[in-house]
Image (tube, rainbow, N blue to C red; front, side):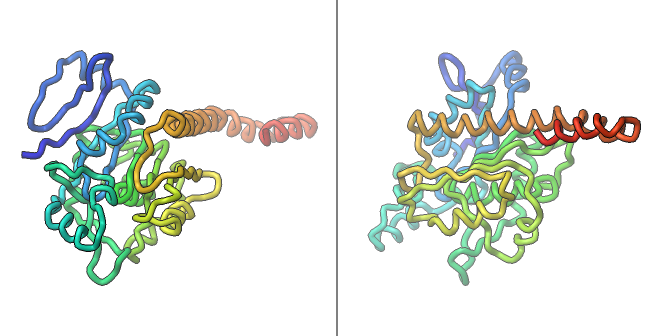
Length: 298
């Protein structure tokens, strides 16, 4: 039976996991975890929570040092891996390598399936949205979302308006602070375009591999282009369809998160001061007003 792994917290000696079907955790561990920041980790097609956790070990360890716990939900749609692998093998394709998944007996899952009439058209059903709604209520709220491939495509759609899409209040899920897409793509179905057309306020990092033949450059850039210029960053690695675990690469990603959070915090701290200056303007002389206006542009 598949066990749905949830939040992962690294300790000095082991990895502590809470699951729905097995494992226990003491009250002190729960208290420590509740004080930490959380990231929603959305795996790719033909992967699972366990596979994605294993493939992001380097990132997880470094984010732990920054105070983040990574939570790995597992998509509710099971995939017949044997049939898929056989079909891909007949085309001369190594499916395990293509989808960055496991070639062992691990069960694999997907968030949504391709429509039969279009190669790049997908539909997210209510089962997935209801599952993620419940997952956020049980394990959230989350500071950010990190996704790979199909999971990044789903994540990119969610961050356009996660509260509306998952039917969550702002108390249940406050505004997200960042989104990272590894080989993610924009959902092309007409149903989802209105969400992308609204200004997206969540800062984003879009990562693609130069040799990625599964999600090509144009699809990655289509999602990247949905963000305003001041809210997006593009990072390119020399590999294919996977998340690099090298120290230099992981450091780049973690540095981006730190820089993004620091920038957002600074902007929030500056906001009340700016509002107060605007309120007081009529009572000040012209020279002082000019000085305040100049400071506000720094």
